[in-house]
Image (cartoon, rainbow, N blue to C red; front, side, top):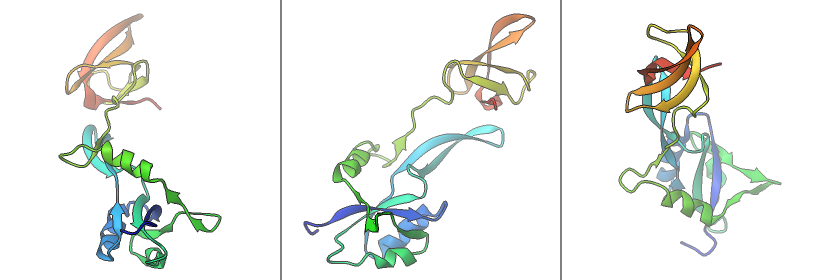
Length: 170
């Protein structure tokens, strides 16, 4: 590595970050695509997915004086380097170091440890005997259950339901 090696941000086509990563690696660039494990509600249930931490972006390390960055523009999955005022945007080394340090050693992924909903957030039951009702999210109650505060018969009631039944109210 040369003294002038720096990290640059690469803009990618939508959902093509992995394709761009693979093709830039084949061209010999040092590439970093931080990923995160998230939970999303799909087809009525919560599923774990692995996705880019920064959708549509990845990072490459290169010394532009020794190696041209022009091929990045024509790389499959990539759009080109992020630029400000015509100059490639340099990503500080500390930013990349911090991202790498926060990855789990076994998988190299960041964990999204945020709860599915925040206490006090309005939610709607999508399934079950109370489907269609809106209430207030109270807490996660085990792996597959949540507690929701529902107004029933003029009184606020704490109800434990399957977490797959609950979605954010519109």
